[in-house]
Length: 510
Image (cartoon, rainbow, N blue to C red; front, side):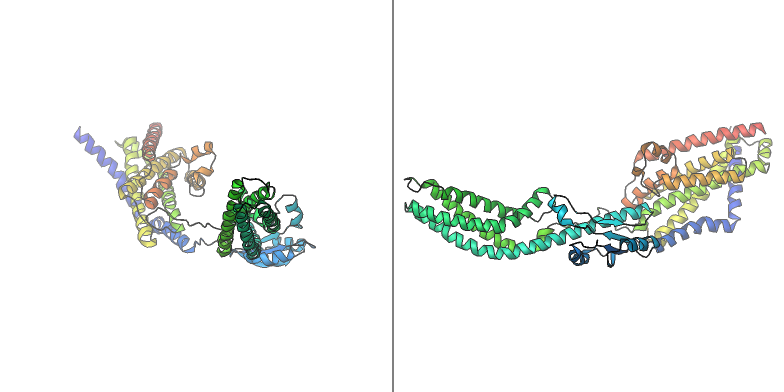
């Protein structure tokens, strides 16, 4: 029994020695397998730039548009990602320049936004481009939103600055109103209802003038706050609310019964008017002191990561590239193996010799696994110490992931090799799997962007598991989901059994 076992081991490792020597004796192949992928990653890392492109932009203002001056003023609010080339009224020429590639973006201003505003409609700035890349299209859409936000902000700033300047004049009226409100209260306390009412009427008239002057501006910002379009108006909305309260109380005082013996309610109203005017005066002072930029945009955002290390954009792609490259190398080496043995007649010698299909397959599995594992270790060392790739997780989890990806990939490769009739067929099948992996493994697009039935293809590819797990291990410092490790193990066993059965049947037919 032991003799049979050791004889089997000798036959298995004879294949290991044969395949390893075949690779080692080809220095150019070793160079391409090891340094080739690293050089691709290195050049990509050096050449990649995450700076958004600057778009050469031309603005079209329709002839006769009353907002030409406004557009000239607000083009200064365009973001740094826009290179402003000027304003034109010739839409045909601008479109031609866009098609010829002389400009990247054409912005068309509305003809007469005043009419649209009067109809309670927003005016539209149209952005025309000639991009075909969907990511660039999304970038232009986001840029357009930022341009609209910047113009909206400038419009609000101008309106707010005008309102703030007017508020200094309102304060003088408020000071006079406070004196009259005190007079109303004092006369009512003395029991002089007629004089108190007369003063309240004068105060009501003065406040009506103030409401007419200030109310429309304050109401504009109050309505904007109510609709959620801007956060300008918390101070403005408070001022408007306080002004309405004062006006309502003065209306009651102006209509009171002057000869009424009990004026306690009117006195309380007069005191409330005094308090409201004092608060209104204080709010006006605060309104004038707050920076307009803060009123228009009281909040700003800051993006932070809970990660332990700052990551460069290229770091995100390296785990996917490692997984994809090792999968392709393993599949290619395995899929060319048995095809070559069969076409060279070597399988017939294996059948004549006391070598079983299982021993043949195990020998090839072990040899190619060792070779690709060494390649993976070298590639990992190069990207970590040569490109500064972070390794935040466990090396044990990393090694287990690589082993799982290689085992499944070798199984796929051997199944292809047993199904293909020629080397060309085997290579074509390997390239199809590589192409599928680029699109469906999360390398090119995140999996959530794929239709759910299509994701079945993704989870049949070892690169999908490798990409997900290696990103978790290397970039997040987490081992990844255990179900992914179990899936790699099950696929490894399944593909090994399928390849073993196919090889046994082929050797039996020889």
